[in-house]
Amino acid sequence: MAEHCARLCVVIPAFNEEQMIKKAFHTIHGILSEHQIGHSFLFVDDGSADQTWTEIESLAAEHSNVRGICFSRNFGKEAAIHAGLTEAEEFDCCVVIDCDLQHPPETIVEMFRLWEEGYEIIEGVKSKRSAEAAINSLGARTFYSLMSRASGIEMRSASDFKLLDRKAVLTLVNIREKDAFFRALSFWIGYRTTQIEYEVQERTAGQSKWSVKSLTKYAIRNLTSFTSLPLQFGTAAGGICLLAALILGIVSITRKCSGRIVGVTALISFLLLLIGGIILISMGVIGYYLAKVYDEVRQRPVYIISKRTEREHVEEIV
Image (cartoon, rainbow, N blue to C red; front, side, top):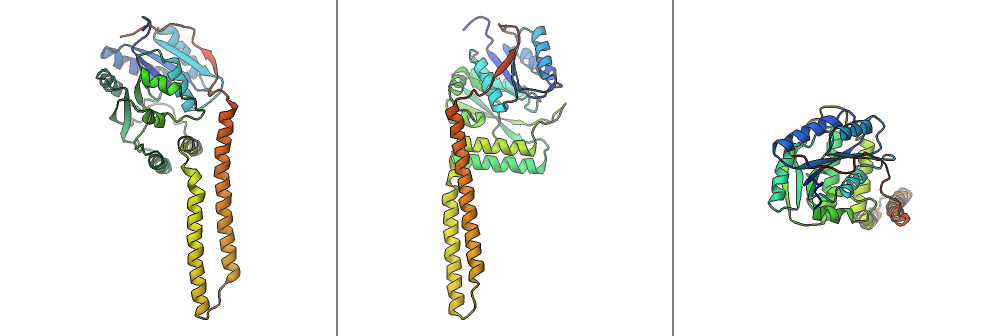
């Protein structure tokens, strides 16, 4: 390994986090230095509209163990994580942590010690969520329940907070998916893995950048990128429709045999609407997957880096 490479690289995606850049750096840097863990920082500005990049440049100018890259526009958190791991693949290990410090930085020390014991992936799993809107909490539970059932991997407490050995990092960055789902793929690739629980902390500055709309889009994109389960919707819906038609047929025959009038028009209208709705939804799901195939075929880059901090080499800081 080259002499300028630190053992641990802290990868921090950031989007409109101007209030948290320096706070995150000083907090994490202080903890790792106290425990004599050699480390460097890589901030990834995901096309922020505020002064996030200015703050990153300022830190990089003051501290030799800080680098930064800036996207040409907002490409999303998954792209930011992928870019960070790609830029840091020469390090012995990398930890991905949110800039808002809701992932407790103290846990990095425990993760690093487990890595020293030989574990190649140390997953941070949530033991307790911070206070959040009921609809967001319900949506998160539903999404991860679906992902767990579809993938066969327990993901109900999964997060992006994890430490990866260089071997795992290289494997992840060489997966050429446009819509790669980081927290699921880190389970999927295998390697010697362990978990460590943490409590999600309250944000100390700024506001969450996730809205209900963005969370919904994020969930749909990642669910469809990691599993083909939604494509089975048409089959399941067809079975339900067949069962409903059978039940309605039996009811109609029973009513006819007993001399009662059967509302044929209403029954037919109901069946047509039911079948038509199922067909249209199924076509929509298939169309969505075809669009994703089209995106993969076009081979557009996952992200575009427009700026980098000037410092080329990162010194090991203990």
